[in-house]
Image (cartoon, rainbow, N blue to C red):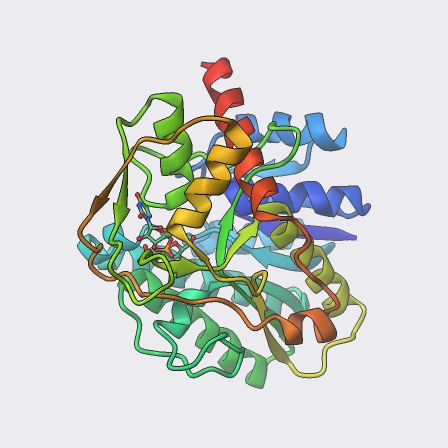
Length: 339
Ligand code: UD1
């Protein structure tokens, strides 16, 4: 069964390609390499013994997307990751975000409709919940007005898929990720942030390897047990496996609705300090950090209600926090050796 993975050379995409190939799916990646490297294909092959098919172009180009789908009319399902994801950058360049993230989805859906491809897995985010009034966040927790153009593109894309599924034969699974961290255990693939990372885990590992002088902990005066903000960190390999389960659910005609939504988290809220402590435990290092003012736009706490994903999707996150921080550190060290 051939699966199109857009953004398949990216962080979550590459881990998903590995899991798909290990289950016997044939993968074709489309990626414009705007935030990833072609070397990822060889590293995927090192893990799974097979290099996925690959085409480089931007899915925002309607002609190229149409031609691609015509040529590859044996695609059975699509997993759509290809998108820009930097919150701050989206505030500065909203049109770049709307153009890229929205147009690519529209072109993909058109290609799917024209070629009778029904099944789509979409990469969404817990950012749609904002700061929920009640925790944990359930799939029916109200979606709040997005705090950034990036978050808004996720909400709009969810709506586009919902609307399209009403008028065309499209079935979708929207996966709302909490905070993916960690890397493949082989350290052949992992997160490759361009420039200075915004996210916690790569900032921690880059500090430990000596690329950054210290980690700034954004606020220790939140209403949480240790004062630092709480998130639901999930191992990227657990997250990748959920995509395979979602594809199997769609292609096996097990969906109960045209569009289904699942939270992908562990269900455990962890503070910034807990992540730092885990990192120190698994690396054996003392991390240099300083407490700073709260970061504008940050919410206090969020974690997932995972019951629906566990029972209905039949998927559960299995890896521990120490496996997340340990694999992230192994990856950072492997990267340092490559250069
Ligand atoms: C961010 C995005 C979110 C996206 C998610 C994907 C924002 C506002 N949100 O979530 O839309 O879906 O990544 O992973 O950017 N922290 C520090 N020091 C740092 C970096 C982070 O203390 O140098 C803290 C943050 O204040 C936060 C926690 O670590 O409490 C996690 O931050 P981060 O990894 O950036 O993720 P989110 O902000 O939760």
